[in-house]
Length: 409
Image (cartoon, rainbow, N blue to C red; front, top):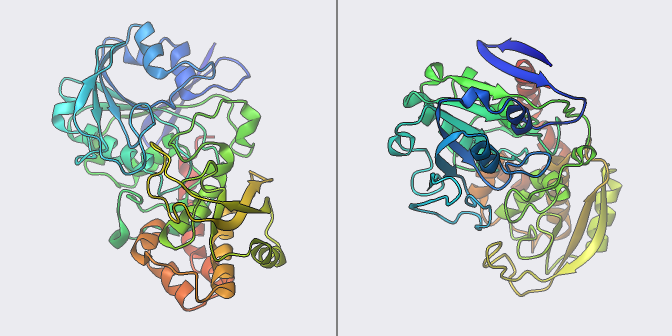
């Protein structure tokens, strides 16, 4: 067994290469019998996605190995991941397996309170992210780090793959558009893992008391971000009710933008984000226009769907009980497909083909997703997709340069 320690900005990152097979940060920590948590009072920030390559949940593994779990903190969608987006969860209950108290940190207080952290020595963070700034787990990450720093609690990140890889897209989040779907000044599609984001949050001072935080990253073994997620044969555990597969995660950075418009992003169907449309759309015309733009890495097919209420997944979706026509999207090149650029082109085509029907009816929310007010303004001024994409090039290039020293793989 060989142990390698790498110093990154004063933080010790421990990696144990145990075999040539892929291992999550959880697997690496479990192989050490969670020795870093020995004799510690531990809180776990997690949900149903924190599984080993064998399908074992972090709480079960830690409990079996004698880790003293005192608290479990659950993000949006709850500890079991079965609660619809935006639903506030209050109060606490007890996990019957460990006796640990379960707290929601997606209630009125989205930052762990001193009472939640009382008596803890360590917080372990292990949640599967999907690689987009507006996915709230990375907002929770920063709030957890900040609370830990302020209360003298160490943080361990058990790292996981970014399922949409290293490719980066989009503008920076501007301060006036900060929300829980965009908490920190990173680009829309960041191309980083949770562990890498934690390093940049701390080192760039995105959180209060950053210099007081003891941050430890347990790296994955044998993960290559330039390979498709599917190559690792990991079971896909839906991180939230509407990201049911990797294809949906891949299109999400672009098709989520439609939440700011009167074009359905597919909620209320069995294929959210990969089925998109509206009653006024003629799919063949839209596909023909997009095909002219030589967009690579995605297959587009016409689809007709009717959004409905799906308890626990989508209530009152756009165009509820109304037949919509649109596109079914299948990513054919998961490493190189630029989903945000695709979303920009699709909005541009809809404005061109349906100027009296397509509306950006929630420009402020589109600003929250985009990170600034430029998108809604440029679309309203009928700027081309190429002009809109070029508008964030400098921000994107600068972020890619900055993130370079924080990449662990």
